[in-house]
Length: 167
Image (cartoon, rainbow, N blue to C red; front, top):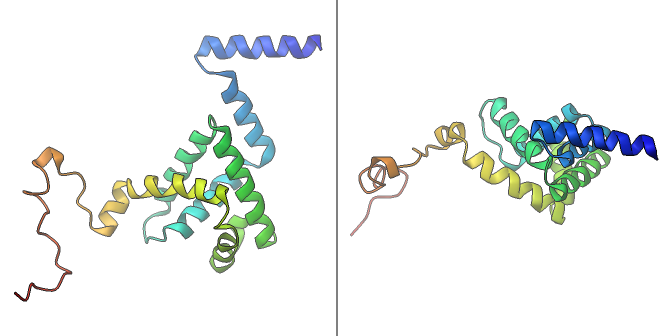
């Protein structure tokens, strides 16, 4: 008991001195114990690619994954959602989700897409991917126009995929 108390004091004082919270250490340790960080990153990147399949470099999905895992370090609800999803996806693919073929990944994700933890992860992936400038370039979104006077003067009438007005 005394040894645990001393460890807690040492960790707490080191965290306080460096400006970090103890919860970040315990969260990071829990993630390291639950699954290797590399496999969690790879699985989450696979999920993101299946949710938003764009022909963009893999580093886009890696950046999004890093951002979500960083958020999970301080959000216990998100950590639980990720743990649950990764466990279910590994089970559904009969091994590690990130090593499965794309078709098996998609089928596994369709098997859990009605679960609340899946919606929580989807809610993390979608805004991050569609706020990424590489995705903007890929889908033809010119980005913010506020600094250029708004869309009235930039991009309002740029679409060319609508049929011509017949009136």
